[in-house]
Length: 442
Image (cartoon, rainbow, N blue to C red; front, side, top):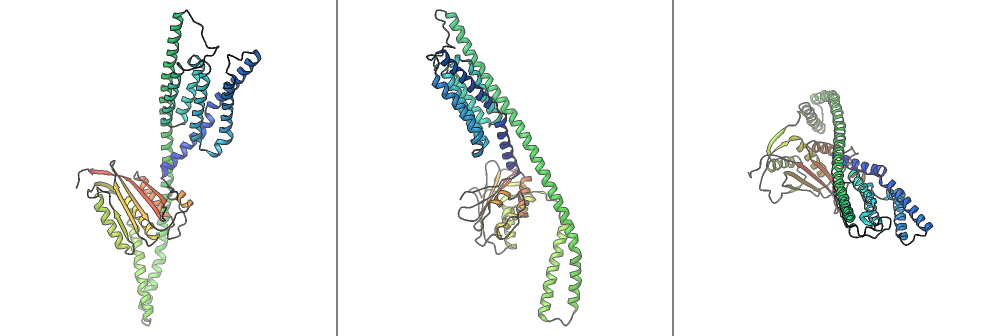
């Protein structure tokens, strides 16, 4: 079974932005125009050589193969590739093929003597603009090496062969000129790659921050509306609860009630008291604050308290090999709300119990994996979990609780990922950066 994961708004926005840049790259890239223009020039050269009868000095078959390859590549990218392949994959593929065809053309037409070597700069610029910095660096390095090898390995071409026998001074000048061309190209390619890649990364980072701020604003507006609705509901519930309490008092004062009815009246009193206590707590809620706690000790105590509230739930907590070492951290109270929202969802999913695995990484990140061995998430739930509210049908539905957990962990710099297990059940993976008070073993 393929495991699918859902990520927070940040990674979701990042994927959308990179996909957009890759799609725009196919439209804004100069390579399609250069490719078609070069094909046209090659066809004209071939026609000229055939009309003039100069067959020996022109590698006609090679030039035909290169020209047709460029045309076929453009047709593939335009009509076929975009339907079946991701834009980023197509961009990398086209730049690699373009570099190979250009190297082949220069090899059969005089090598480094050919002024067409200046076209090597086009794949470098396009890679820096529309691909990852790592791919741009690799492609630039390969192109510089290909340019260097073309000094020593090439097929002579009469148009670019210089008959300078007996003119040593001219030979030396041409050699210095060619070496200078290679050094200048290498420096220009590296400079363009680094500068353009840095500029693109800055623009992407800025766009990412704008999208994150926009999504954060939408999230804040959503929770503001939700809070206003909750306040209104609390006010609306007060009146019917008061009416029910009056009815309860009248029933309690009736002396001729049968024993079964008196038991029901006592149950009504208990339920009314619980509702009033819940409303009172809702009015007394204060914003969660940061606390200095010992991570594993606090987690153990809260799990024990949760176990008392839900005695029907069985869980197993497996610590990492360094579990004996506790961590004195500053932890926001909202983390616990998020954690127990997920635990309650897992507990409601079935009766096979819950397994927790925790580890603190070397870069001070707390990773907690929650395995629930029953239930299954649909494709729609996996795609929208935490990003939208889905109708929740117990035992394994997703609703407001999961969205709250996503929002809380996102504000704390963490993440929540949900996936189906191949053996059945659901896996929840929580990642949270820790702010250590001290790093000594306690």
